[in-house]
Length: 201
Image (cartoon, rainbow, N blue to C red):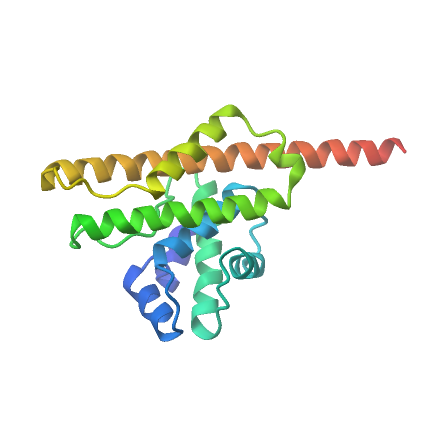
């Protein structure tokens, strides 16, 4: 299903999203946008496309319309599927490998910034989940916050910078999926506890 949907709508096309954002006069990058959607989902947000669009507007003040809004909802759905996929298909939306490493590193920082905004927005509205997240999640969030401030090192060779970038992206993929899995399990447990409590009354 993930493959079919991603091929149908082409939602992971960085340049296409950049063009849409530019057309609407928005300064946000495609990476920042996808990071925010991923952060919402990783914090236990429902996977309904309309929720993702509305939450993006509230958390990042991005009022999207037209084809871009449709693409964002498709991107949200595909991201939700990827986070749940046993084949580990979740990939941050970043510029292609043909772009300079400095540009890709900046996009990675944007992605992390967006992720933290989306995660914080959802957690603020979901206190039962927020109160039960593990220390491991806190460590991941601190790492992502550090990555949001990172820049490609001026004293690094291009090969070293490329290797560092690849390692950071791979860490991010694993870390975000793990946070998503823990948040999902916690949300399900909170819901079960709430349902049990209601049935006892």
